[in-house]
Length: 158
Image 1: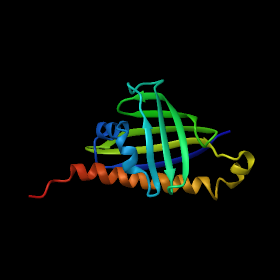
Image 2: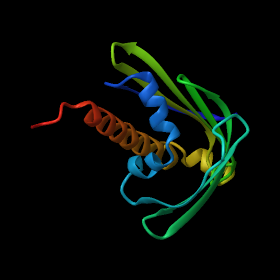
Image 3: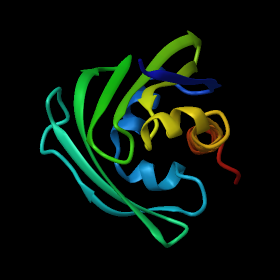
Image 4: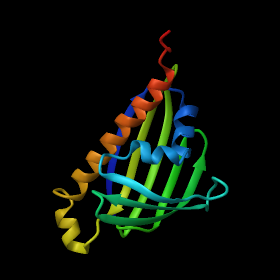
């Protein structure tokens, strides 16, 4: 049975812009928290269901994590779903949902269905280690996404 983490934020941008932002791999580096750096990124030729992406991140410059994910669903401009084929979590399914909630106002929901590493021990430690890490990471990512997209809409000063 998978655990579920979910974070939702409203961002002053169109749902199409929010979807495009999440399709641009350069933005992964821009929204990761300090201390989490993308060192290698392998992209598919086409952004469609079944495509695979690879990413290597360094945490605090010391811990290297390799991820390979498959795009399960690509449904512009509403939904992206990626599933880890390889990574630190034995189960990881990440659902990105984008919904228009008003004129130039969108909702971003990240829902992660996961099992923490370390088997039963990881499940016991989830509330103290893994869930707080996910909460910090997605809070940072949502703040950065909001900042970058809303900054792009701000009127330019003369």
